[in-house]
Amino acid sequence: MGSAGRQRMSAISLQQDLLESAVTALPPDELSAVREAAVARFAVNGFPTTKHEDWKYTNLSAAAALSNAWLQDKPAQNEAQAVAIGTEIPEQIDAHWITIVNGIVDPDSLSTFASLTDNGITISRLAAGVAEGSIAVDDPMSAFNAALLQDGLQITVADDSALDKPVGLLIIDDGSVAVTQVRILIEVGENAQLRIVECPLSAGGDRQFANSVTQVVLADGARLDFVRLQQRQKKHWSVNRFSARLERESVLNYNNFDFGGELARNDIVADIVGTGASVNIHGLYLAAGQQHMDNHTRVDHRVGPAKSTEEYRGILNGRARCVFNGKAIVHAGADGTDASQSNHNLLLSDQAEIDTKPELEIYADDVKCSHGATVGQLDESALFYLRSRGLGKDEATQALTRAFASAILNKLAIEECHEYLVAALDRQLDALIDDA
Figure 1 (tube, rainbow, N blue to C red):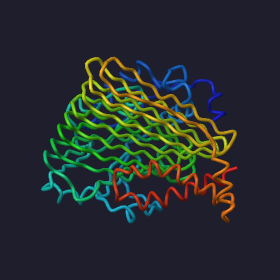
Figure 2 (cartoon, rainbow, N blue to C red):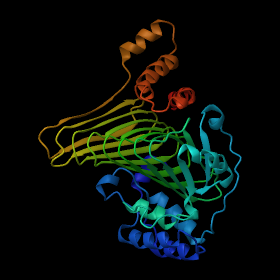
Figure 3 (cartoon, rainbow, N blue to C red):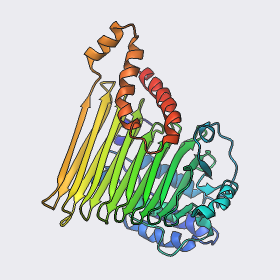
């Protein structure tokens, strides 16, 4: 079902009784208490609908219907398994790779990290147990995630520690499970550094729905560089929440690249609670056909001075629809805040649509804040110039869109991803330009 059709659907709710029954049917384990508490929390609001302001452009009715059908069968406990999926990512991006299949961590992929404990990094499975209260339930979708959670990762970096190369997370849905949940907990100690590359992929032609949550805590002087490259199959729906708490002088560099999926929703939340902290969020989305991509960001400046920078860019073709809603909130007393956000979009089709809304809420006086958005088409004079130099129409379009996208690519937080991303971007642009 295409984007326009999805938005006309009457609201379908996830059935609470099916959720409760499925959770009860799971065998007791270390996450049982987490699931039981989350089921109760989910009952308060259920799935978000287009009546909610933050979801008015993104209808999850199809995801709710798929989840109801899956829950009706009382899904059994997932097991860790090896999956053969054709991807060159681990070979092309130099990282310590961990594989998560259908929400379950592959234990064999964790074996290499046993030798890294001397470097101050500890990685464990959530199935082995988590501290009480460590699984956050901040919104309806994170409650749904916790209610069905069977595994995940906890990554802890000791004070003053760093790794020689990034941690890679290869997150795969192979189609054997229709609905999956992934939870990642990250704690970076004082003056420590961590780099993470997350690559969500999917296999198979069946409709799938993935709901993931990443929680981050950055101690004083900590730094996290996080690159997420989403290249799911066209029948895949996903909701992704990334939330971070930043203490004094900590730094978060977050890059999000959305190239795949029928529907992709990202909620990026940064809570600045320490002076001198810095948040840099950059995203690029390419959408063609009837893809629907929705990016919501929120940065809370609770103290100052501190800085946040947000820039998202989108290239749309066909009947694609994308959403950007960026919000920076400067709370009372956060003097010295420097916050900027921008969203720029290229529409290659007169049927493509972007709904963009950068927002500022300012309750302090001594601040420096700006926001802006642009929506337009390729410059005809630039196209004419390139074609007059011998380039075909598609070649000229590819050159200009590549230059537009490079503004985000040039802000890449992890250099080891650069070569792969350049090639992936070129492939996606070729496919997008060919879209009717």
